[in-house]
Length: 219
Image (cartoon, rainbow, N blue to C red; front, side, top):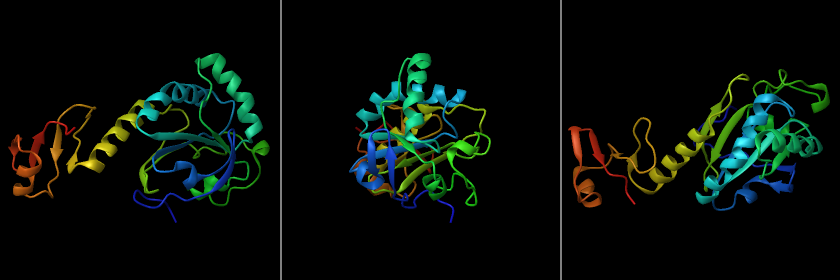
């Protein structure tokens, strides 16, 4: 069955560049980002893995772990890391899953369920749909899913922005408007009655329409 936002993230055990992990156990009580790429030693993914390594301290501040995935073996990941360091200035500083039996890719519906063969016999084009981002919450539920085409590098700054929004809205009865960034005004949920809103937001709010109640971002 296809995965949807709100579903429990499938658990799995896998070999990674940092040893064997059990996914749910590895996540612990924080957040996690699982992002995949179709093949090692490919150009767009080289830029992505390097950029994500540079951005990792920002995810660390938000109690969010990062883990990558490819259908290539861990030994190839370790060789590729040298190229990433050389060309991008950052080698991966997070685990990369070796998914040569396509188990995790199929579990997360990233590749056709009838796909077969090991990494050596597959090309990036064979694995075209293995180019996804999943954000998983502390409850092990999927909070975000993104799938990108082969030719377009992912925007991990946007993933960080959405993580800020999800962590904020998980704590407060608010939503974030279009293009929202950390520190900007937010919107009181339509489901919050007027009296409750007055208690939660005693400073009041701007309401250009009754259903659009705008307040400063809660602390």
